[in-house]
Image 1: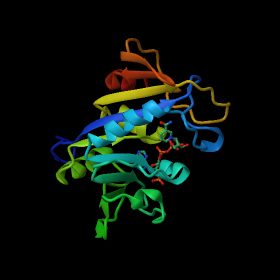
Image 2 (image 1 turned 135 degrees about the vertical axis):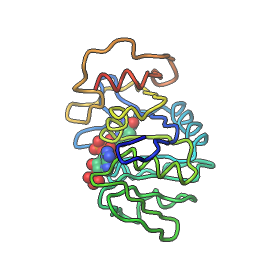
Image 3 (image 1 turned 120 degrees about the vertical axis):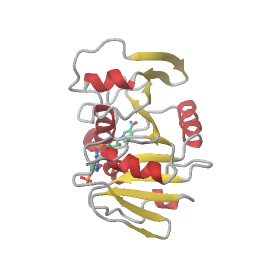
Image 4 (image 1 turned 90 degrees about the horizontal axis):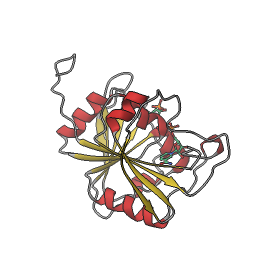
Length: 209
Ligand SMILES: NC(=O)c1ccc[n+]([C@@H]2O[C@H](COP(=O)([O-])OP(=O)(O)OC[C@H]3O[C@@H](n4cnc5c(N)ncnc54)[C@H](OP(=O)(O)O)[C@@H]3O)[C@@H](O)[C@H]2O)c1
């Protein structure tokens, strides 16, 4: 039960991110860099095909403009406080519904639904509403602020980090910076084409941040 009496129900949340060997998830000024290998992109597609919704933060929508392609995932979720997104963004070209989590708007227009989740946006309220919409599994694909807030709030159930076979020049965004010393964070490691896939313990990562 939360402070406002809401029953704490939320979907199962899987966080998947990719970083360079030197820890960057993007290039200078947030520029998108292809870190995943072809094989890793195939793994991510399999993850997408196994969830009800794929979620990103508003900055990722703006800088990367991803399609978030999947063969069968029905929902895309974007966090954006003012609820205003460029409606020409690629995410709106998917067959499913786009849910915009924002501070105050509650409406549906065509295949787009706005849900309000408090001011500032409260992720617990947001995920409770998402759950009420029948969404049981969510793949969170970043970026940094969004991932950090879910991890700090202990709202991640599975976490994958692909470390690509690449260095990225200084000046980009580092994901796991400002961390506290924390041991035993790796659950599994697998060398694959183009990098290393780590399965991490999200509870431990949350403690570290
Ligand atoms: N390598 C990877 O795996 C990967 C994956 C995805 C993205 N990226 C990179 O990550 C960068 C973007 O990351 P970012 O940290 O700048 O932004 P982000 O996490 O994509 O988006 C953050 C924005 O979402 C909105 N938001 C609303 N409620 C929120 C809440 N409760 N918690 C967090 N965010 C909330 C806020 O915008 P408002 O204040 O406007 O509401 C916030 O500024 C890009 O450079 C992209 O290329 C890398």
